View 1 (cartoon, rainbow, N blue to C red):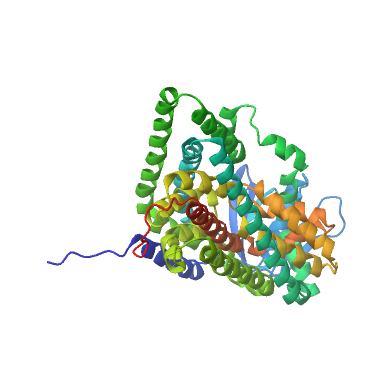
View 2: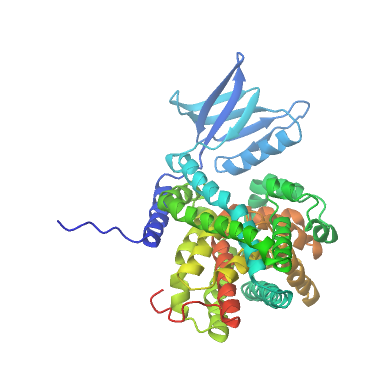
Length: 512
């Protein structure tokens, strides 16, 4: 009997992406339902209302109630969050609704002691915990892998001159490609002018719906000081840096330790280098084990994302989303291909085929850090890059190379300015390029952090910070797309630097 041959892992992941999107679309969150949690008779109770005519917040000592219509689910949730953040209490009056459990039509009621107002989950969002486990498993490996591989990578460079040469190439590559990415975004945004295509009605609705999320992101930023950021790269306590997951501090300590190991006697350095080398290999082996559940994790993540956010939000911001996606495609498949053609002998098809598994994981997790172990494995096994280069270039890139994020920040800055009728001159757009390039270095490789760094860029050119509420609705979906560009840029950099150092181990990559 012929043995059943299962499709390769990357094909399973791609199938999971497609099936997850379909599943999430079928079981998407109902935009006309709300779950009201309230206290009554010393008990916590929940009721699901649907299709209300009016949903009003009655605030004590305030004459007029704040009311929302039937298609303003997100606005209602956002306003309730704002009241909670401000420490205010309000009663909620719902009229003309249908009570799901009681099956009552034209239902009206005043709710007191409201605890929360939320969307009703579906089977697509309820399975997100499976995807979260998958992300946590990959993230679990990121810090020990970065520490071990960077230490070995720095130590294996042998001398200060080689370290300075490779380090200089790596930093230069990341800064140049980031600046190019922002420029592509700015050019496209100035040509298409997506902000001028948004109506005043849509603008007001988006700001109303996501203003609370925007306020939360702005407050998360705190007082950003670039000089302090540079100082903070050096850890006062390396153990605390590991506990807090501060990647820049971990990278500094790892590289410094690796350099010191290359300077002391081989007799003393060798046991430590072997230990860290074994730890790095162990982390990569753990990736192989974790990737067995990758299709299941990817399916759950995509299902939950599509189920919660849907694709309908893209219709509202179609021009903005289109400019970001076209820019990412140009940079990912155009600019990187050009660089690979110019500075390496690897075939373009071979490169993209070799990293497709890392790209799929990047899309589903929206995290460069979680994708790092997979990207390292792909670059070493499929592209034949030496371990010393991947161990140094990729962990560094996962933290400081954010081309996709930078491109999106460039587009978003111009888009928000256009919506508010602000004309950005050449000097202001040059300021965006410089600010976004250096801001990307301090951007943590985790989902959604790009929106926080965008606030810095908006401040630098005088664009209203609350404008980020305009793009919050599609940020999660675009975050998935831009992480592909971030990860691809890391891999392309590793190929180019390895080629310049003649450290691509397998010269014939036709079967990669």
